[in-house]
Length: 261
Image 1 (tube, rainbow, N blue to C red):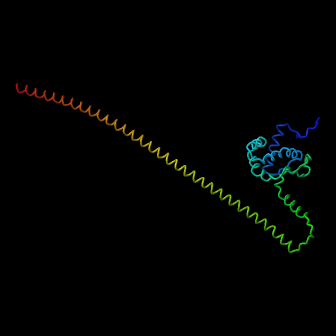
Image 2 (cartoon, rainbow, N blue to C red):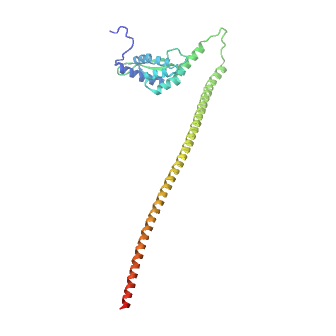
Image 3 (cartoon, rainbow, N blue to C red):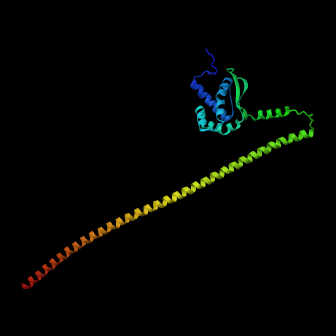
């Protein structure tokens, strides 16, 4: 029996239900509205709204708690950067459920769940209703046709001016970001060039030192070889000169013998 079990199990085990709600919450934060069944939307509202209230204080602890529930870095950054700023003045009730009717097939009740502060059309309609409902004690003067025409003409002009200002601000921010990125790239290129020049100089010095050492070694080896060749040649010359002397002596002895005979 239920006995005061308030939350809906949604026909799933706890792990599956938590994963589904986490994914739905992150997609709601990223896209600001999603279409789902009414039961899932009500369960998601109970799951998301405490997360949004926690995002009002941007601390590392709150970011870690929210990340443990959402398991999505992009949705966490979107929540703390943009959604928390829009929701800062709202004391709760951050979501709205708009029923769409029954789904074809299983006849499930469908709805749209959205973040209240991101539905601009409804907010503008509420503002206009509030302005119209205000009554002054003084007698209300009827507006002439010219005044109505002027108001109708000025409204789109004001909107266009706002859009133009916003676009100019965005363009200026983009230009500033582009200039910063270009400066960073130039600094990186200069650093890389300096480091490469230093490395090239070091490599050239090392190569020249090794070449000089090798040349010195080759020259010393060549000197040793030349000295050895000289010694061998001097030995050969001395041997040849001795043999020539012996031959000359033999020839002289032969001449003397022939003369004596």
